[in-house]
Image (cartoon, rainbow, N blue to C red; front, side, top):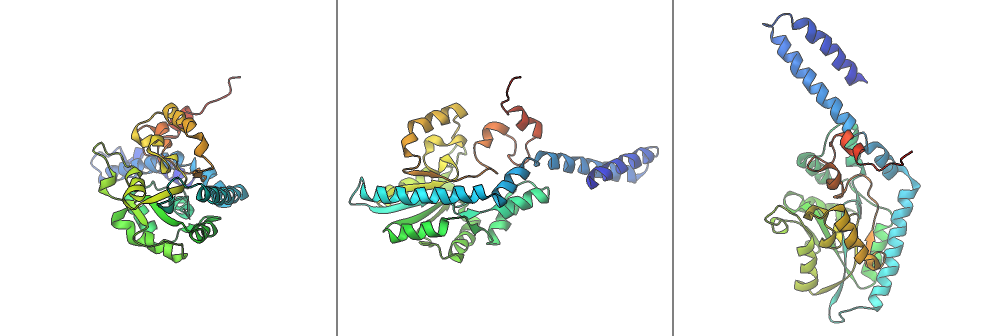
Length: 294
């Protein structure tokens, strides 16, 4: 409310000074009013994050879902090891990083409390601070993967330049297995198509074909972490993606392990349509909500 009061005060002041068109103070006040109006709009637009962040940071259900997910992953990997399709290939598990094995809850909390939108500069600053913590069940599961004779590949859409060293440092901070240059695959220019689409498919194929691994399990918080057929950013509609998911339904819980992420995801691109996900107008989001007709 402090910002609102400031705006009201400045609007009144602007009206008084407007009587003197020669005054530079009119222009200064107009700029300030415009700035405060923008801040108020940003506050309104990111308000949706509050419930998601509170759930992610505090709810026992969030903890339980991660523990459940990695318990299922352990059972699935045990089964898949006994039923390998390619006996001559080495064993691999592929995991995403953000909201899959490391939490960015503090960064998203800063986005909300500071009324800032996401930007490359503040995201890079967060990653370089190396403060992301392992999510529930992660450390035990990844060590189980190693003890089972599998290697872990960390496939993330964090940018290779400038975030490789900081990301590797964050993995090593918690002694995660296979935290080395060979097993950490960040996004490079080679992962972006001519149309500007970014995909993890090339890196998954590299692991399977060039490096000769059988990928027994994939863990991620977005369905694009598993197969490019589920990639919303690739241009598929909501209905098309859901149709592809139905075709692959047997893989969920057996080869694909989905972890919860209520704060951001590629599916939001279907909702905000060209707007920034974190600052898209609230009314636009509200207009997409399905409702009981009463």
